[in-house]
Amino acid sequence: MKLPLTFKVSVVPGRGVGKKLGFPTLNFILPAGSGLEFGVYAGYVNEYAAVFNYGPRPTFDLAEAILEAHLLGFSGTWEEVEVQVTLGTFLREIRKFDSADDLKKQIREDIRQAKKLFP
Image (cartoon, rainbow, N blue to C red; front, side, top):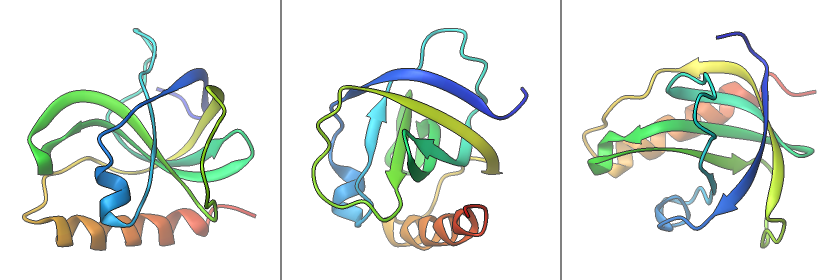
């Protein structure tokens, strides 16, 4: 897989877990054959810097692979249905955390790492 990868995708409803953890996300289903490997990435949703998780969510025992994006510095509601997603940098592999608090600590670290990559 060669980065960056760019997709046109539609926003789909999520379960609201990211918001409850303090990291609201936009959720997407990638087209079959996207070539994207499971993992955490830094990139963009339209013009917004974002941290992405692609794959299952093992901390919550969810096997379905979805793409979630937490937009950095964005607050409010998202009304666009179709967006351009660009995944530019692989940050880490997906793993199961012992607790939601451990996951939140890692997400904060992922965001810290991603911010170093954006101008």
